[in-house]
Image (cartoon, rainbow, N blue to C red; front, side, top):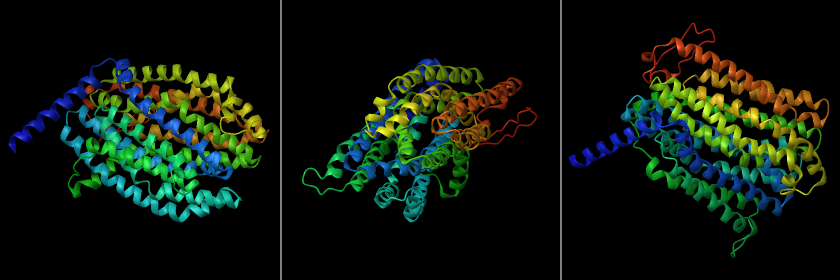
Length: 482
């Protein structure tokens, strides 16, 4: 027994040393090139799943495709809770690893499973009861209402796989393991893609489940993904008395991400309601944009995922220069890759829309809207990476402020104002929002650098990620401990 413990301790020490070497000394561009491809591949598979899933549902019924667009904000909210909590765990773990405290890092990892189960139970219960009312608020079509209720209840009530997989994935990513989560995402997406036509259309002797089959395929894929990451991602739960304190820290660090993801739910819902004043075709065009968005945002999403542990580790270690380099390299890579998305949305919008819909009105609306939205992809790189930077370095209020500016103060209000001049003007809300948010992010980042320059390295030591918040004038700084 003693030999086993000794071996385990040696393994943990080696793993911590490897993480320190990777995040603390390796060239930033090499870190991103090493960590990003597995994440990008996993997200690519997920994006293909989203597109293929919509194709199958669209072929089964028009009401089903509409239902998927309407239920999308609810799914985003579910992902916000799951992934946002995981990001909080990821940030806390990376900070403790940066401070050389592997034992405390494992405590945060162990608390993740309990948090995932509790979040799932609450979310499932609430969604079961509110789904019919949400459906009737969004449409007057009885067929669409029925599909929303059926699909929504299945994917929400049986979402335990999503919550567990999200937490365990972030645990592994905090330690630099991107390959296992990649394998999990691929396994889950393949499961979903294979089951979709079988369950929707009733192949292989099975009954035709329709929209319910699509929902069942979705949750089956989530369960498979969770099973893949469980072996390495699950950690022993800490003592029950320590859970409240650990959970408080996790949610404080994850709050900006949860807020950012949740805000997407409400701003997409708000934009849908604005467009509904023009036509259902306008709402459909926006929904098809978000389908394609998941594909073209893969590089940016991968950068956001990969820089969190790198930034947290180096900020906790007091290495501001590596934090600056990480931000600069990730923005540069993001701009280069997102330029491809801009080119596609500007040059072939009609072809992209016809993949899902042949409706002439939807195509004509998208031909105007897609190129305008595509222009926003470049400033969107900084408007989305700055909140991640501030979250990873413990400045959650700055991160939350940028999220609120983008999704609450700008997107929906600007969408409403521009829509008063006509449908074609509505789409300008996208580039204008991203430009203003990026400007605000640059201003906050400049203040961050000025304050960091005045602080001695000894002020960091892994403590600042407890939620240290610097005022804009640099006159006050609150310190705590994870």
